[in-house]
Length: 532
Image (cartoon, rainbow, N blue to C red):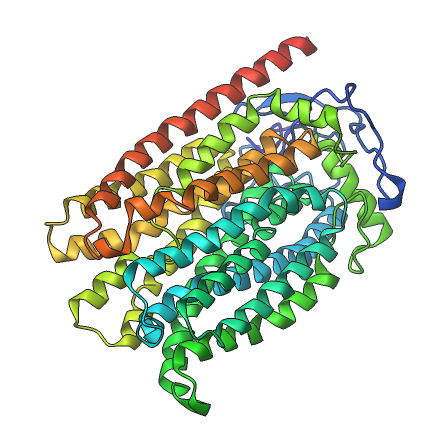
């Protein structure tokens, strides 16, 4: 039952009921944020709240302020529109709040999705360039593709935590677009590379600049959206990576056909140039559309009243604003189970497959010698289409049922299935194609786990920022060397050791998912007992 008790006007529970329990802030060095950032302490809860517990074990409260009328059927049951399964439906949400969330979607969700699109476009283009002539033009051997990926990953890991610390001091609307412009310039410079060593060096700095984006974007989303809204937005945001992979394949196919040899440049160099042209305006737009955080926003598309509403919404769900990142904050962060369990969870997820520059499907197609370069770039984009559909679909179910671990386990099952099939390898061709196609259905686990971490750490803004950064940083710290051992390019397209490793990793992913669920439920029950 959602919205109201049947036959009465008393509110029972809405999909936007929110966590009451937050972490203890009395041990903070500074309970008020620095005035120069325009931040204040907004930790009070809205009046007249009622405790409830959802299927994930997260305790929630529901506000008694309801301004939206709810229709009932002949049996006195609230009518729920069919589209409630697809997007937000909250009978207790006011028109003002609905309009506010719509503005957020148009502003912050759009610009973050576009930013992630260009990040993945500039990250994955190396794979398309490699199979489109770069390997031959630069006299690269198979292992140098792995070295290029190691260079990118090393820069990506090194920049993660420093970038998150910078975000506690600098506005996201300044820091994120600045890094976007840096990696865009570096992408342009790849078109001028004449040796594989130059490509390796440039890719290190591309990874360093791109390291800011993913954890920062999830921190921003978690600072504006409620739990019943968050996973859908996080997965729509993440789905832009699938769109980028598809677009990169189509772009490279088109560039190779239409621009190869123009002005003396091969098609793979034109790919880097076109990626840079696409990225530049999006980076500039980020300076105006990224709204920073509710406590210090100056977004032109949010009124003063809407900014106040944003702070109240986050206060109601137990999301604390930023304070000073001092010694007590680090003690809080490393004194809880959150950082350890969530980091292990994400390390396993990031390393369940090969590195981003190695696509077993593309290499299998190329090894078959049955397809043109255009088709080798286009056919694997169907994997990205599967990723896009499953990412959005799993997010809808995750927000609707508020059961993160169950949906994450479904995603894990797809990963386990495809990796077992490809580890066996000697299977009918149709089954092998099917396994390659559904492999990306394992990807939605990532953004849903980030949404879950946002909620688990929601009562402590500093912990949330650092934990999200550590999850991504440590995941890619292992990714800098582990795929080099499990999926070396010289073993393409068979990758026997790699697919066996992936099968074991997905089993471990099942285990850590439900361990985190158990730890969260135990923590919630302890806090409830303290309130009674």
